Image (cartoon, helix red, strand yellow):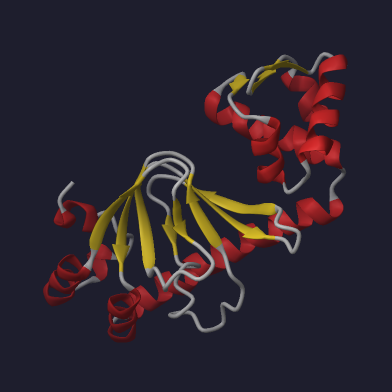
Length: 218
């Protein structure tokens, strides 16, 4: 995809004048990342703002013991600004971003976006609107981890994956644990309980949903 075509997908594109549009297309880059590749992480330079053109990203933080806690995911058409901590000075925590599938990103470097947002109020509003949405997702995740029982968290996650990909969820216990902020052993025990109760069927690297209604009841 050409940069001009990709730039038109930016939510604020129609709010830019001709000079600003030229500025964006000249400075932006399109980058491809393979599944499992780290897009942004601890020690990385400021990435800037990213628009997902293809694929899915997972944004997470690391606990002191090295456990990954997934904050949210970004699919096609989503924008990320938490990787632009050099732009939003109030961001003081480190997030990591990994490609969950082969991805294509439209990236506007931080220096360019900073200049654009200073001269265009619509771009600045977009920046803080997206930041607010992402922080809302982070707070929801923290509430899930802190206040919901493990069976509810797991049932909710399985249902969300079921809505996206159908009855067969191709994930290992480890991958599920990473996504709900738990330990693999805990997830394995709870999945086994769900299997005994007839809610799911466990396969090698997969979970098959058998009773959607029962999961919703949990």
